[in-house]
Picture (cartoon, rainbow, N blue to C red):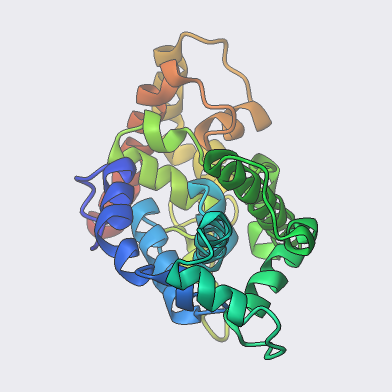
Amino acid sequence: MHARHNFLSPLALTKIWQALVRPIMEYAAEVWGDGKWEKAEILQREMGRNILGHVGNSANESILGDLGWVSLEDRREKLRLKFWYKILKMKSSRIPRRIYDADFWDDNPRSWNKRTQATLEKLGLEDYWKSQSVDLSLEDWTDLVEKQILKKRKEIWDQVRKGKSSLKLYNRIKTTWGRENYLDFMDPKGGKIMAQMRSSYGFLKENTERHKKGYLNTVCQHCYKGEETVEHFLIHCKMYDKEREEFWASINTKKTEGNFLLNTLLGKDLNKEWSIAISNFLKRISAKRERIAIWGG
């Protein structure tokens, strides 16, 4: 599935992934799904890149952070603990319960029971293992497991993103893990341009020149007044002054320079009423840049 054709919304593409692809990789994961499966994680991240329209090898944290996705390993752990709950509630005569009881004292660290114990300990739920009892409804148990998984995932995401220099701009506008509302408010093409700008992995020279050897020419080829970074492109390049003036007029707001405009155009605390104007502005200046690059005007 390739999302860069700009016709399907991020929500529609997410539903396709969740309904048609992910269930295949998670079939019976309650039984076999312990440990890491890096190829599956790579596939999920690549799908996320397509949904967001990212260009190049964008940082994983910007993908999972904006989509609000946990890892597939996290999801398999949740499925395992839901199945464990169901086993505990089974009658002792049921075959799954009999197998569970027979293997309870197995010291093999790769056994299903030991892996389940390790998962509970990892999530701070070891007391339930010790008591071999969960006095909660399945819904409440699932909510508790999800809460602990999200707590761990947010801690990891927060730590890793802060350590990546390539996410300097992203870290200015994104400090809380979770799905961003620009994915729902903006049209597909405008939303994908915003996603590229937020991650600093787009069509601008600061990205396209990033991995080249030797002399890196990142100077803006349209105004020659600085490096073509996201901030320069959105805020400072004189080539797009007309579009900026028309944007301010369209949102009926007093013109403000600096961080307010940058944060607005990158979807920080996105005002739903401005989403159409922001999308139109991003599409117009991106199309103008492409047109100048190809035809010189």
